[in-house]
Amino acid sequence: MSGSNLAPGSSQRTAASADAVMKGHGFYNEHSRPQQKADSLGLPLLERAVGEMTVPQGAEPATVADLGAAQGRNSLEPMRLALEKMRRRTAVSTPIVVVHTDLPQNDFGSLFALVERSPESYLRGVENAFALAAGKSFYERIFPDGFLSLGWTAISVHWLSKVPCSIPDHVYAQRAGQRVRKAYAEQASEDWRRFLGHRARELRPGGELIVVAVTTDDTGSTGGESLMDLTNEPLLAMVDAGFIRPEEYGRMNMPAYHRTMEEFTEPLRSGTLTEDLTLKEATKAKFSDQLWPEYEQRRDASTFAGSYTEFMRAFTEAPLFAGLDADRTPADRERLANEYFERMRSLIEANPERARWDWQVALLRVAKKRASVSIY
Ligand SMILES: C[S@@+](CC[C@H](N)C(=O)[O-])C[C@H]1O[C@@H](n2cnc3c(N)ncnc32)[C@H](O)[C@@H]1O
Image 1: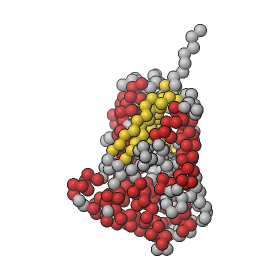
Image 2: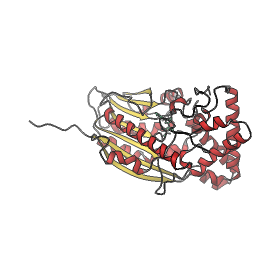
Image 3: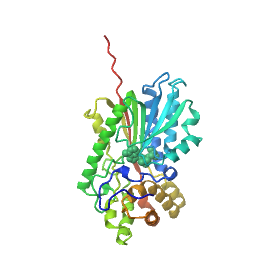
Image 4: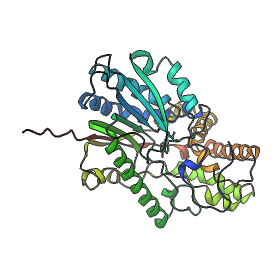
């Protein structure tokens, strides 16, 4: 991991200022089984969207955006499903282009190695299909007006464009007091409106967007609060031990917020954001912890703790350790991260129940209105 671009003492940073959000060299691909399960719940909506959306015919390409693709493994199945279904609605002469998007620092190398070589790749089964990439935040404009037939985003929009304020004594806003939670909720609302506003321009009339996202239950709980505490505790212990400086800990904020269903659907239902988008489906789904059944069967706390720590490391290391001071060498950073994840592993091994996360997922299907036909 390379150095942070923060000045010591700076408390705010954008999500893009971390090296990347996911741990590189294909690490996220290897440790993202729960996210894959969440993605699978969006597939029926994706199938319905492809069945009903407008599809270009002739030589004009149909373009699909995979927004927040990470290293691509969890995108293979949704993209394959979408392309196979689209191909049934178009002649082979209509090219289909998939654009995988993520932050510029994303590990696109691992993504392309997989998309080009995996037997499960959508490029295998669908003729005249192309894989491209765009390294740009989805809170900005990525595509020209009317360019996209279909958008897919899974387990990505909880990442905010920036940390709106620092979090005293925690790394997750959802475990903080009201003032911090309000600032994060406002940032999440602003980001979500920007995300939808850009997609409203980029989708072609009749195009569709599927969103799979972590959400909360009716009490405001994501189900992952205990894990959030497990993320924080080793850091506090390392500050006490003098390994991590208090100012560094002060910058170790996760730029993440899990919106409620109301927060997801409000701008789409009220029509305040744009008249162009309609909410076609909005449902909530749950699934239980994907690593727990294996633990329950074998009672092997050490293996469970190891797997859980790697799952956590895949998405927490880069955003947390971007908070280290600029004078930390790459070797310091590696040593501190290893120490931190070893402490997390021990906490989980001592009490596996604390890591258990039963997920709540929002499934949204949004369409851009079709062009009205004028009759003279
Ligand atoms: C948990 S991964 C999800 C990957 C994959 N879609 C899946 O379902 O497993 C979240 C991805 O969102 C990306 N991301 C975070 N903020 C982003 C932003 N503002 N614009 C584009 N991608 C972003 C991260 O870099 C990361 O690769």
